[in-house]
Image 1 (cartoon, helix red, strand yellow):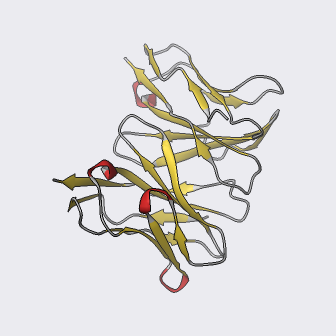
Image 2 (tube, helix red, strand yellow; image 1 turned 120 degrees about the vertical axis):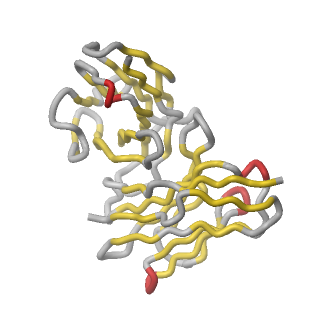
Amino acid sequence: NAGVMQNPRHLVRRRGQEARLRCSPMKGHSHVYWYRQLPEEGLKFMVYLQKENIIDESGMPKERFSAEFPKEGPSILRIQQVVRGDSAAYFCASSPNGADTQYFGPGTRLTVL
Amino acid sequence: AQSVTQPDIHITVSEGASLELRCNYSYGATPYLFWYVQSPGQGLQLLLKYFSGDTLVQGIKGFEAEFKRSQSSFNLRKPSVHWSDAAEYFCAVGADNNNDMRFGAGTRLTVKP
């Protein structure tokens, strides 16, 4: 049983470009969470999704950031017009339901030049 | 909303010595509590979790943690540290539905030979 998959593992973008981060949850998991980890800091919750629904996006910046989890395919975290402050590690986690343990992927390290 | 504090940013112990990493949480009801470990450049691996029941929880790699409601703590312990335990350790607290998990800032463990 494969774990949570994230790709790419490393992503480099220039300021103003778009970044797309993908997360495939563990088999049988329909709940996905996105977190951001800034250097020397812990993880900050961004958004919680179930298939085709955003349940909680209280941690998402109001502009430029969006997330989706379509019926088919991976969850996508999209950052438009990236700025240097977006450079961070972005982690995805999945769980079988909203009250169970979250299992984390290896993360995508975004660098904005 | 729940929150978690890890008072120690960095701890250094000698190989073979005992270890205790502190975690204090703030939440009005019974929390879901977790310890995760993160090796450099890697994702988070679950060490152990507390949902209910026995307040002393055994995890992987010889770790254990004790939930003390009176002290709002969930400290992580290991009787004898191995060099491979050097990593960043994160305590996390979830609410009733575990949708909104909050992480501490992490404690970096260095193991001296």
